[in-house]
Image: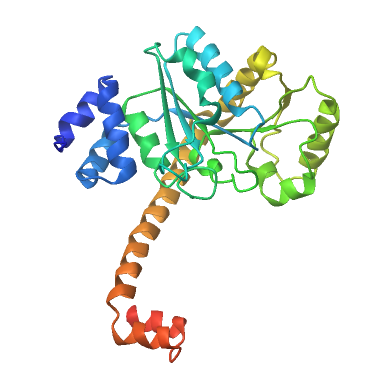
Length: 311
């Protein structure tokens, strides 16, 4: 039987670079294990904001290979980096299906690189419900740069915009219906666009397609660059990193502060929804006659909900 760690000691250990403590901190926060409520405020106070780089795109676009290339550049500059990779959920174990995460195994012995995979557990939006807390834990460990790689579900990935400071959207030649992508909000969230596998036919057309659609957008403060890469060969990765740095400079301290203030507000709203959902579930289980009337079809669900909520 595992022993619940002392919250203060666990957070202090994670903040001092203890990777096992960090892994345990993430697990407790992600799974809402015993001690979760005591750890959250301690981790929040200890956290040092990192520059969060979100990488999103369809499955097979090369997000993991691009992430691997960015890790190489960051480490060559002497900076530590953490990666939070959200993967599909295994229907058998309930854990993460690691997919292309094996591409990052070259960094497994590098103390300056921390990679954590977590399962989406059916959560839409490209992330997982526990991702914001895992990111908080990584900032508790004071990683200056955190890369967040989404699950790769296609059009439901806009949630990454609220979690990252710089969002990279990865597409490939022949990436599909541009209008559909625009409807999904992908064009609105991207700060940098990457056309990966650019050695394949159709790369120039993909760039032209993106450029035409971005020209129809409403953003006036920042013109997202479009960069062609062949991530498996390392081609174009330097340009992607330069674009990330340029975007960070464009935001400046005030812009970053505004992004993070909005993020905290969004996380507050999400936390409230989580609490209210639990309360609603409890009400529905203990509602007695009201629940019975709804189940029997004698009372509509909306009136029943209002009655249970005291409205």
